[in-house]
Image 1 (tube, rainbow, N blue to C red):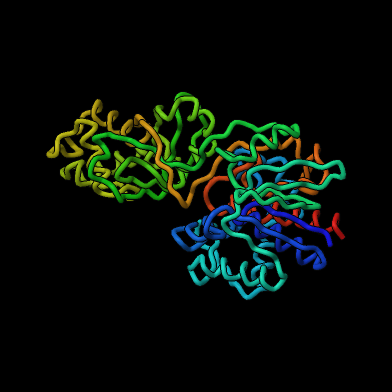
Image 2 (cartoon, rainbow, N blue to C red):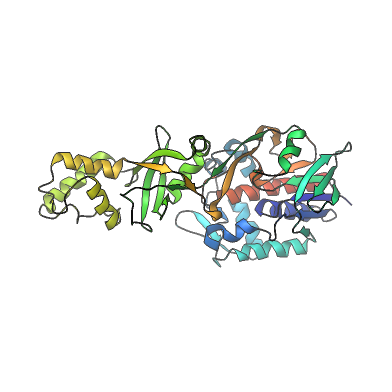
Length: 409
């Protein structure tokens, strides 16, 4: 009997195990998890609802949401993409719904639905699940099998090995991978909120803007999306996208940097000034402070007006050009200083990991060591928020599982 070992009881590990066991029922599939629970990220994802995937069914468009790994994943998505994920869950009685922003969740709004589905499938295919079993290292034998050493000092032989262990940060596998010739790309947090202490934001925690644009200075691309003011600073998709695409740069800056915010998204200066002309014409006696732009929460608008040094009693008819210019800047290009990051547990992702040049994405197999496979975040690939990281886990897990099953038939 062929023995297959999968390291990591998360999304990628479970999907690899299930794909292997379904295609090759005669193999003994073992899944090892160092923690006390399986699928912990699935449990907390999306505020406990599990953002399963994203409604994006074109592999080219889908791959554009990955700061690292886009080219490699593009081909992989032709093998397994969100439509396949939806069909897989539907065949097992799990209905998935789509929200207005494209994120997809189980209709139960409960991540436990996904976890129960996986555990039931694992039981159905007689996958051996091992908790409290952390791997300490492995060696490659002359016959291309693997000798695995676990935290309880036991050793296990495996014909195929799949690493689906998540981030390699502080992982005992780092040394074993480097010994056999795998390069590890620099590891850095991705998807984190920005700590900002600024009087313009003080007391506004909980306010959200539906579409803002954020640029890391001096010259990053601008990133758009909803923006949330928090007790510590700024979060929401616009911020998380910025942190993902600029992850390595921000680590180099030690998370002290400046950003520029257009609170009105892609609204241009000429369009905003036209709106101000309308205010002057239609509401000349109304105070600037009390004339809120529809796209902004009232309290945020008041704070921006205050930051432009416009007096509370100043009406549109009285507003001098100089102060109007200051208000335009406050709305469209205000600079804010970031002093650190805050990582939300449910969004935590690490970029960096196993060099993608050393991975054959047709089989998710090492180009250096036969029968060694990879799935998920242990590789140098990561997506922005919105279900993209789970989709990468399902895709790479499925391909790795299929490959191991075929090899061990």
